[in-house]
Length: 363
Ligand code: CP3
Image 1: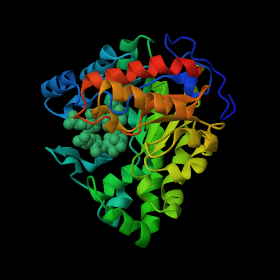
Image 2: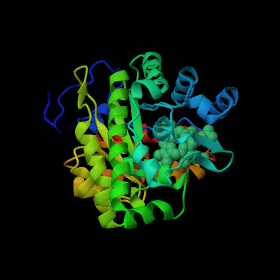
Image 3: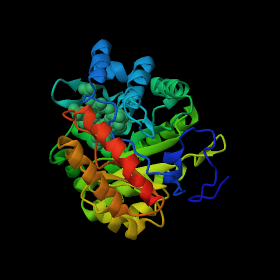
C-alpha cells in the first residue's frame, strides 16, 4: 500500500493524464480543465438524448444513454476529463426514498425522512444491486473512452444528501434539517452515519468499476454555522475520505472535496486526507494556494456567470484565474459551480481553449 497523501503510482496508461497528475500536484505541460455539469441542458445533443430517454431519471438509469451523454461534451471540446453522467440523489433513491423530478421544480422525494421511525429504518444500500446501473455506466464509459482521458466518479456528501432526504427536495432555508440539527442532533447524526457508509461503499464501487478519480459534492455544507459545519459535514467527509481506495489496479485514484461556500474552512478541509479541494468563485485562488496549496491541489474557480459574456471576456477572466494561481503544478481549472443551462456551448469551447493556450506559460 502507498502511504496516505503520498500516492506515487503514475497513470501511465492514459493518453492524457494531465488531470490525474495535477490532482497529485505533479508537473503537467498545461493546466487541465473540465467543467462541472459539462454534460447537461446547455448542449442541444443532451436535450435530444434526454427527450429520447423520456426523462432525466430514465436517462441516468440507462447505461447506454448515460455513456452517450457523458461523451457528448468531449466530442465538442478538448476537455481533460470525463465525469460520469448521473446524479448525487441516486443514493437516497437506492435507500427507498423515491426520487422524482417535478417539471420546473427540481428533485423531490416521495418518502422524505419526516419521523424518527423512518430514520431508524434507513439502511445502507448495496451499490452492486440497487446502484448497479451506475456501475454498469462506469464500465461502459471506460470502454468507450479507451484511455483517452480519465473518468471522474462522484457522490454527494453525507450532509448534502441529508438535506434533500430530510427537506424532501431543494430548500432556501433548510428549515427542517436545521430544526433537527438543533433539537435532535443525535437523530441527524444517525442519518449522517448511514449516509457516510453509503457514500463510501458507493464511491469505492465506482472505483472498482473503473472511476479514476472521485469527487464529493458538499453543495450545502457552506450554509452551516462554523461549529455545525465541523460537526455535521466535515467530520463525515473525513470518514468517507479515510475509507476510499487510494489506489486501484496499481494506479493512484485521487479524491476531490468541494464544499460550496467553504472558503472559510479551507485549512480544515485540506487536512482530511483528500488530494484536492474544490473552490467556488468567492475565493481568491492565489490566497487559497498560500493557505493550503502545499498540502493539496486546488480545483476551480471561474464564476459560471462569466460564460454569459463574450469569448474575449471569457479569455480575459480565464487569464485572471490562471494568474491568481501562478506558476507550478497543482491546479485543475474548473468553474466555481455547475455550468448553467442558459450557457452558449461556443462559450464553453472558448473557455477550454483559453485555459489550454494561456496556461502553458505557468508550467
Ligand atoms: O457534472 C456532470 O456533468 C455530471 C452530472 C451531474 C448531475 N448532477 C447531472 C444533472 C452531477 C455531478 C450532479 C450533481 C448534483 N446533483 C449536485 C451537486 C452539485 C451541485 O450542482 O451543487 C446536486 C445538488 C444535485 C441535485 C440535483 N440534480 C438538482 C438540484 C437538479 C436540478 C438542477 C436543475 O438545474 O434543474 C438535478 C438534476 C440534474 N442533475 C440535471 C443534470 C444534467 C438536470 C436534469 C435535466 O436534464 O432536466
